Amino acid sequence: MTTRTATARTFALVGAVAVLVAGLSACGASAGDDTDPDHRSFGLQGRTLTVDSDDSALEIVAAGDNPAGKVEVTRWFKGSVVVGNEPEVTWAMRDDRLKLRLKCSGIVADCSARHRIEVPRGITVKVEDGDGSVRARGFRDSLGIRTGDGSVRVTDSTGPLDLRTGDGSIRADVSSRDVRTHTGDGSVRLELGVVPDRVESRSGDGSVTIAVPRATYRVTTETGDGGVDVSVPRDETSAHVVSAHTGDGKVTVRTAN
Image (tube, rainbow, N blue to C red; front, side, top):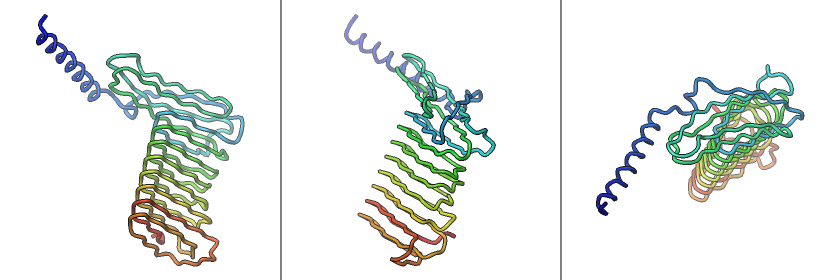
């Protein structure tokens, strides 16, 4: 076999694999297309649930009709590979820590999972997600979210919030009196339905917008490169504290419409 012939066959093989990957990616279903999701119930012994996920999109819901001590988990997943082992998804509960894992190897055409986690009211929830977006709603108790790479969205909640992402935007439309947010790279937008006791928001690179009900606030702002617009009434002795900082972007503190 000549060198030219061997090279041609190598390119042909690489091209065939690339076409196969592209074809599977185009016709393969994502996690959102899975019409037959898995479902499991887990017992919760204490009053705090920790969700430990390495690589999944998460939806966390505080459901009033969920029985006490029960966590309901629904998983949408559909994955396929061209070369290597099939993707593996595992879930387990130990010591009130729900551990979700997604393992893909080989040449992957589709590998994604989405989990919906329903918890009873009266439960404090802590979320640790390595890579994936997190959505949460309905919380009256404390909610803490940490994700390494992904957006964070929280709605319809009144409990204290501590929301952090290494890379992604943060959005909250809530009636919480204590809100703390931090993103390494992304914008922050907070809409508060009640006068807060404390709001602390920080972004390494992105705009920060905080909308609060009409009241008098003690406001501190800082931006490395961007404008500052504060239109709420200010009083350095106010018990209602708003702090907004960004390394690069505009800071806005305004009265909610």
